[in-house]
Length: 393
Image (cartoon, rainbow, N blue to C red):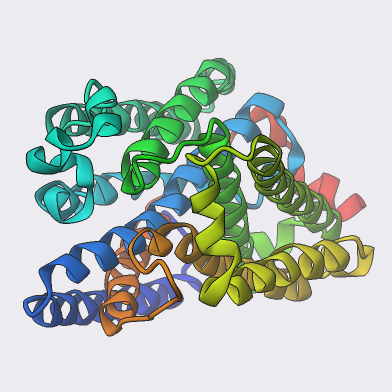
């Protein structure tokens, strides 16, 4: 038996409903996109960048857990592993972006590059061949990390070999480094190059923070659903939730710090190549979105997560986490969409259906993966005697 019988119907229902929503959403995206193929690819890219942030963030937090060996990882490890394994689906779902390169990126059009000196200088990196090659490199790195971590985790459940915990810890240190380089490169290729005249050396770090924040938020939201069922219901004390709330607070602060850091450096530099990116996002029709992110994506969760009562009550903490999942969608929208809607936000139906379509397929894959293994890891030497320890808290 790979998961509790009591939670199995819930996961089956989630998988089925998500798959239906995903298929309907994708069909509507294709149908509506036939009238405007450029908007189709733009909406698809925005939705893809949002949803791939969760499996990438899950992979990083999983490695962080193996590296530190903290007890906070016990209730969420299976959720993180299931999320990380959906990276295979995301590799397939990225293929439409490859076909839509010329609709998305100025540097993919030879005529535009020939008349633009800046694009000519960046052609050594920004070119269709390099874009495709790096796609295979990025996903290759993520596949290897996810593959080894999940393979050894399954073996640990089956054999109880204590050396497997050391293996997962050993790969996680260099793994986080390679993961970070791959995420930074992907952020530059897929998002920053939408405006190829602009650049930021903090951009990759900002996306690392975004992915860690949304992944942990999503994980806490799912944990609330699973906490009503054994074995999590019987095994995890409220103190574990307090630790997870503290980590979520740290990620909120990291996101705010890097976002402000990028802004203040651009402001202080006052260079004409850098200013336009913030001018179109901080003024005009996009300004209210930026202000809302400052208040709702930082100050509100920051103040809430300072409260011990919020962090020790999973129901309340999951509400904050769900709010962060939603606000991260707005954050990525604010980062990506002004690349083409420069004056003000215009939410298209294709935007909505793309988020629902890709999201439905991803959630269905996640639920399917979550059913494959026990909800709590078995035979991990770091968690031996967990029931006795937790009941003694």
